[in-house]
Amino acid sequence: MTRSTPGTAGERGPERRRAAGRAAAVLVLVALGALIPLFGPSPALRGTGEAAAPGAGGTALLRTVLFAALCVPAGELFVGRLARSVPGAPAAAPRSWSPAAAAAGFVAALGLASVVAAGNLVPHDPAQIDVGGLYASRDGRLALLEVNAFLAAGLCAVSRRPAAQVWPLAAVVVAEALRAHPATEHGPLLGSGLTLVHLACAALWAGGLLHALRTLRLWRGAAAGAALLGRYARAATVLLAALTATGVGSSLRRMPPETVLEQLTTTAYGRVLLAKLVLMAAVAGLALWARLRLRRAADPLTACSPARAEVVVLGLVVAVSGLLTALPVPIRW
Image (tube, rainbow, N blue to C red; front, side, top):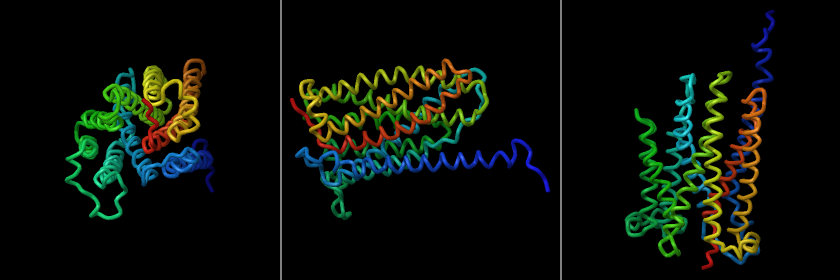
């Protein structure tokens, strides 16, 4: 009978159990994140006197999938570029999730386009979907643009030049920014500009952190890992500043300063925005904790622990953002 030597099966058992526990925790958190947009409208609307559009839960879920599908490839392109600039970095890179993300984004965009084609109602019969009508409205054309952009992103992801995804992904960001601010709104170009910067920075931050952690896991033990995490952290500081500025600007456009405190508790949009602010405060705290560990700890890679928690909370932020897009906006001009 052979004995297990150090670093073999005798030590792998506890490590595998810990990995299985982490995987189970991630699955639970992903499931909870999916429930936020699916069941969020009712609690948020309770007692406000507002009414959500039919199928708001499903629309919020589709929008959440679309946002997540945007974050994954954007983060891969962003951190992949950072990794290539690190001196002495290993050549190994994590397997790309971009093709799967593009497929998920395509399905979500197609679902959202079908809602627009049915007169902004959830279709219960294919006969209710007027595909030709999509070309006749601004929302319809933007929905078609997102469907085609995710299709193009998927084709680029499996091609010899995956970096070309940046153009269809940019088209999705522009379409979302325009969709969120209709022409009837006061100053729609300003609103679209704020949303464009906000969404682009959010995709780079959330997707970039996810890909950075996947890369560090593959580079385990490599000195270049700390350098990569440091470069990402410096870029994330700029992204956080831009996110904060554009987020505050967008909120004040929809909730004038004298009404903010009241609307944060009396409107569905305000309540969900408040939940997003709390989550973002937690994200900022975790990011600061990771930055301090990166600078002061004997092993800079211990910063990965708060960074993992940060990426989970960012996932919840994406889900809350999806819900926010499906609620009535309290515009008061």
